[in-house]
Amino acid sequence: MVDSPTRSARRVVVLAVCLGAVVLLCGAGAMGWWLTLEPAEAIAARIPREDPLGTGSTRTGGPAEGRLIAGSGKPSQLPGSWPQFRGPDRTGMVNEAAGLARAWSDAGPKVLWSLEVGDGYAGPIVEAGRVYLMDYDREAQADALRCLSLDDGTEMWRFAYPVVIKRNHGMSRTTPAVADGCVVAIGPKCHVICVDATGGKLLWSMDLVRDFGTRVPDWYAGQCPLIDNGRVILAPSGREALMVAVDLHTGKELWRTPNPMRWQMTHASLAVMEFAGRRMAIYCGSGGVAGIDLADGKLLWKTTEWKIPIATVPSPVVLDDGRLFLSGGYDAGAMMLRLKAGDNGTLEPTIEYQLRSREFGATQHTPILRDGYLYGIRPPRGELTCLDLGGKVLWASGRGAIFGLGPLLIAGDLIYALNENGKLVLAQATPAAYQPLGEAQVLEGHEAWGPMALAGTRLLVRDLTTLRCLDVGATP
Image (cartoon, rainbow, N blue to C red; front, side, top):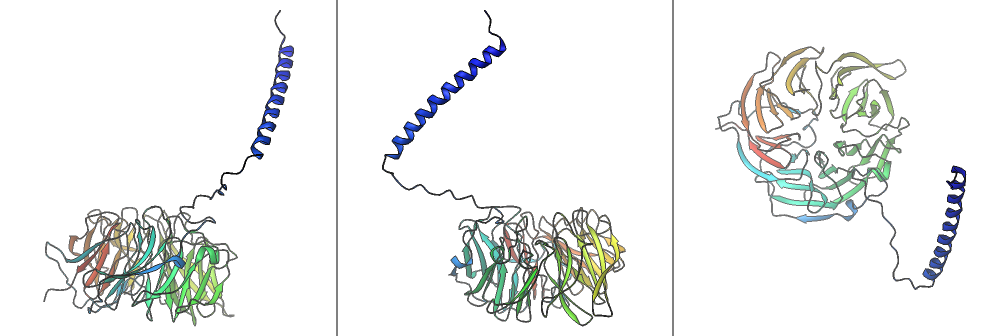
């Protein structure tokens, strides 16, 4: 006789119940036996794996565990200064080209020294014959603020602290700032340190994630610190503050700007602007652009008309007449904002014009304003480009001179532009036409994306793993 489906189902249920009872009895007996045993050792609590970008609650190491390591280098007696991101005035240029060569031989500029550095795009600065670089030591798993001799690259000292970082398009990518005997630097995971510029002793530190609720940006921190009149100005863009000012020598907080908009930190650095009797810091956050009064941290104005969903990297370019030129990659293009002062002292940003990405943009490096013209490297190929302040493109370097994500700077009327494969081009800074004066392969690596620094006749360039010092001076 064949069982019906109903009868078969009943048998299955009965068998399952019986089997469950047997398992329960066996389990209870085993539990009683286990409880009579002496514990062999304590069971360690599970520790969650550290978030590779440091955005979670687990954060190991940091400046409090740092140490100063002495080297044998000596400060150079050579003149010249490049004390912060984008140079002396944070404009990407110096006004003088005296002593600089205006043409190169086939061999190109002489390489004075070369140094292996950790994976990254961090830019160097120069002050009093010393080169400062925020590096990452992969072997020691530590951020390392290094002080090198401008003469030969020999390390004078480093302040290093442990922090675990996984390579994600490089590691370090911020440029320090030096003033009044102090060097301030931001690490990839938003640790901020201030050390004595001569000897490297730690003066103070902070953790923007811990102190302000900052979320470390994708591809790590790219913001470069601003030192302004004895204060360090930072944009944590966390739950607790959009912007903050602390005393340069002590780290004591002076003011903070609330962040009710919940904007997050981008890779952009601050620019300083003076308009209508106000001196303000301009910041491109994740949700827009804001102007903050440097006197007290008050939010003076904001706009949500300019934001880049993927990555905001270039800083605003400040014009003298209350205008701001904004540019970006990832199809953002460019925008000219104009501030207007109201009768009651308010400031209102308005859009003067916008450019599509095929006309002009800047994926990584901030364009440079010189004599009423803007010079930058526009996507997608990375052509060196000049445009007027009305947004008209006057010339582009074309397919024969492609720079990718490489940097540029200007000295007097000379443009130094480095392509991402290490070829350096010297060109005339003129709106008339693209006029190259010389070129040379100065690096053999790749991803030469880091900002350059010019101190006197010494040009510092880098790629992913090499920092190199070139002599770009005129031959006597």
